[in-house]
Amino acid sequence: MAENGSEEKKKRVVVIGGGIAGSLLCKTLHKHHHFDFTLIDSKEYFEITWAKLRAMVEPSFAKRTVIDHHEYLPGASIITSDAIGIDEQCQVSTAEGRQIAFDYLVIATGHLTNSHLTKTERLRQFEADYEKIKSSDTILIVGGGPSGVELAGEIVVDFPAKKVKLVHRGSRLLEFISETAGKKALDWLTARNVEVMLGQSVDLDSGSDGVYLTSSGETIVADCHFICTSEPIGSSWMKETILKYSLDDRGRLMVDKNLRVKGFANIFAIGDVTDVPELKQGYLAQKHALVVANNLKLLIRGEEGKMVKYYPATSALAIVSLGRREALAYILCVAMIGRIPGLIKSKDLFVGKTRRQLGLQA
Ligand SMILES: Cc1cc2nc3c(=O)[nH]c(=O)nc-3n(C[C@H](O)[C@H](O)[C@H](O)COP(=O)(O)OP(=O)(O)OC[C@H]3O[C@@H](n4cnc5c(N)ncnc54)[C@H](O)[C@@H]3O)c2cc1C
Image (cartoon, helix red, strand yellow):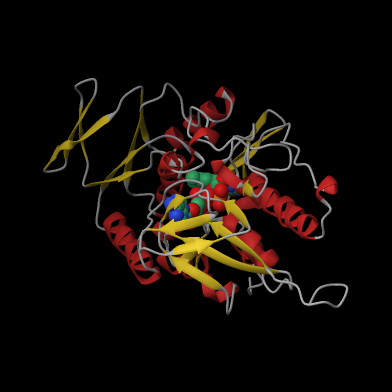
């Protein structure tokens, strides 16, 4: 029913991508009288991505972090498939052969993850990772960004007797934040006996019988390895769609101040897939989602001129957990390490907060 009492057709909103950005947007629009929304996600669940390293050392933790989309969006239209096309007729096509028409489209495809696992398979994967860690004396981690550093931190805190080796292609750890932050993380890890090798990559195909060859010809002996390199942006499929000219040279969707994809009045983008000039962080992806939810409500009321602008974060804020109690925080260009930053993130990794935002028990 429209606000003036006359029958009005609901607007069809299609959201592609069920990470934190897409999930929170759907939760905000869920049960809104004027929208009929459909979430298309490669997988049947939302995963709190920044909690996955803890789930590898404590698989039961994953039961709170891997959440079936239907759990927080009861009764919603959810399609588990890859989006593979968007055409001029305002239709999204999926890998399973469906065409879904939209009035408004929101792209939230962030980074490609373990796309096609079922929730059960994902939980089993955490169990398998845990068993792998538990049964190994020496563990090789490939990648020294936030995932590699956080995994090393989880392992050395929960399994102090294990030997961890971390190989990173770059010249320092945590290249997405300052050099000082990278140095503090390096010192923290080496103080806990982690062997960090910088400026090298590992040829994983060379690994036989637990012997791995690095790009500089060194050999590393380890019982198992985990790849923690950054995932590609989830936009390569858009190169064959009407959005092909809206991608920048890094594969990010170019958006305007209202988070509309440049050149399109009815297509928005939120989260890590956008070219918004700021650190790619989940809490910022959540802000994008709330801005777009507001803008969609304004658009259907015919108040396009009042649309909310998104102002990129002017100062970087990132927290890298180091096991269960400590963390490295990068706030206002200052890096701090230890128990105090750990109080903010490391105990629960924002899992309770994120669940509450989705209307679930913490
Ligand atoms: C180790 C680590 C720690 C972090 N810690 C923090 C932190 O403490 N605080 C913080 O704010 N941020 C943190 N981040 C960053 C945060 O995880 C990301 O910024 C956030 O997950 C981005 O959310 P998103 O919804 O944009 O994308 P994603 O989480 O990448 O979700 C994208 C979704 O789109 C789906 N998808 C992709 N392609 C398609 C397609 N073609 N069709 C259908 N579905 C598709 C994927 O399956 C996925 O569900 C951390 C990241 C890492 C790696």
